Length: 287
Image (cartoon, rainbow, N blue to C red; front, top):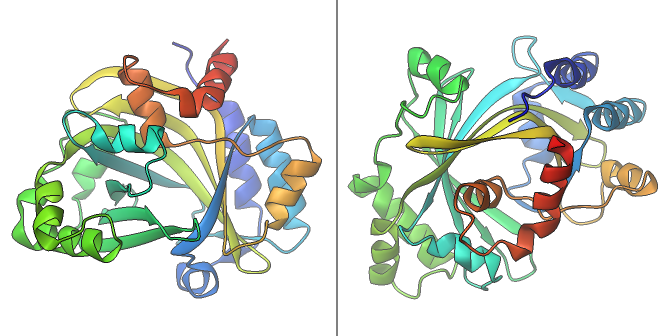
């Protein structure tokens, strides 16, 4: 399997490092966007760098913490043993959700995140703060070592109750009993590790650029290295300046889900028609 070209990844990171900075609290105040429309693109590194340069000329600022604008992320996605959440997404079932735990590898900050869709098609994210992860474990996770297991969060009554309440509130489950049953059925299914940089755009929208993306099973085994840069725009409604630049340059959104791409790559027996364009692009990028 091809190893990602770190020189091109570094070029994207350098384009963010040259931008004016925005602090996390200001970014959260201006563009928290827990309810939003997301558009995703799979770009070559040079295109992503050109996009960032264009946005910089129009007032974009890069998230920076202690002078750093590139941050390590690790997400463990949950599903049932028969991948019912993946199948629900593959068939566009109306009442569906995505659940992951996310560790910010530079700080050890840890959240459980539930993603659902509103009646208007907006993505809605609920977050529960968990205990921080030790720095030593974060260092191992940064290198994609699947031997560093996530603890079983959903055996904890307070976590299970939080999830059940949100599933009922968001209309995923019709009763508290059903919501608790759903929560009890979930286990870790796929892990993603990558480096992210974030832009705050004029008008309150955001852009993230993920590079060095690795997808793997929780127990190790199959490991998929995704070339290029996964760019995601996040806005409250209308297309952002980043979307308009990409459309003018001939780039259209792709249906990309880190979780779905991981499952489809690790378990090719499962249906993946909904992500065929993204899977084909990944194959083209590797050749």
